[in-house]
Image (cartoon, rainbow, N blue to C red; front, side, top):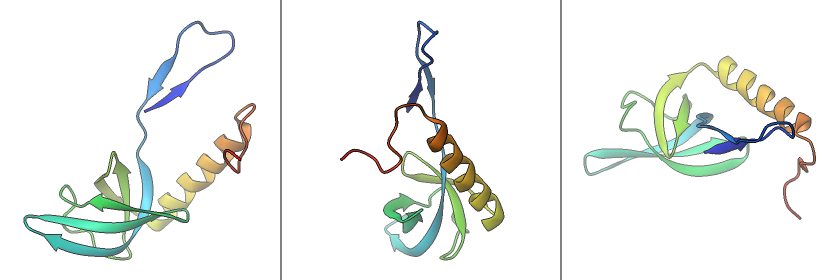
Length: 99
């Protein structure tokens, strides 16, 4: 979960976020399918149980380690661009991450 805080607000607001990623490879493991998914240069293991039709090369929306839907590459790219813009607008945040 991500928290959002505004300097004039006395409470935190929480938001869950699903992030698009590209399936690089998929493997059957017992009754589940696990994929290697790339998120803008970072690769993570993701479960494909909710999108069994997803194949390598497809883009999926991932929430807490599970792909929850497929999406078109154009939509994934638009989302990456919006996330990049949001990161640039965050006050006091270093876009390169912690030193």
